[in-house]
Image (cartoon, rainbow, N blue to C red):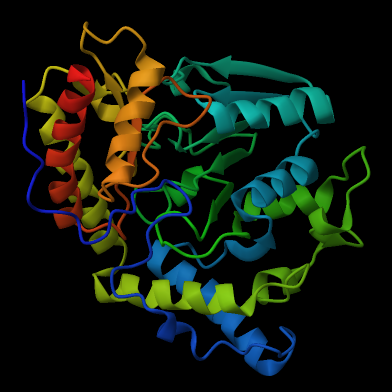
Length: 379
């Protein structure tokens, strides 16, 4: 089959799953008010950090009695702080169905050496969350960024539980429903759905998580960058903008803009609707072609942010080489950047469909994917 190159091109070809596309109205001018060269502990710095925390609570609907802190090292740093500071008080259940969840298993089992049971599923599948024992601590990802598989809902998590739920929600926050009453620790980074700059993470603690921090001391030494308590009490300043280490006020300014943009598109509901529309455009494309499909097998678990795809055509003899060639063709044409599957994931493509991506750009890119597939098949 010979196909002509499509005439239309995406205005923005950035479909990377992190760092993700900036909000559509972003320009460098939005950073003009960043207090560069000023201390983050000066009144202007404290005010902006507090505004970032308050804006996060507002947009996500985080309960008032939950603490929100800005922490170093992106989502990874936030997760590590939670694991090192909270685990060890009781047995742990580690849940993984993609590479980042598997990384947390390694940290707990091999580094912290805590009594833990691992529950895993292959890429495209999800662990049976109903079968878990929530009287133990449970560590899981809400949305598998590298597999495109998400938790359908929080209904399976009991409201009455003795253990803590520790949730890596980095590619879910601002795009999917997060049931705060079922989550004791929630982490994410600015660089995903909000299109913010990398290196900063967010740590959200329920009252139950705070109680654990104040009543339990881990058996291992904690690096300063992980310490959330002092003298058996929570360091409240961390959750009011007094960060553990020096933050980038340029990144903070960028995040504040992203929060303003989120308000302009209807807050959390608007962000979810944008992500849903983007993902639906990809799903509709796949439904009308017999050579590509969603990596996630159960429709209820399909991610609306990190949409992972696999090639299903029997004529493809080397899936990895074929997928890389298709992604390379699209990048060479300047119509889709950074859409190859994650290095540990099955061969295929990964299209970021978070709220900062315009549906019109997804729709303009997909005919190019059609073209690239057939061009590579004929090569």
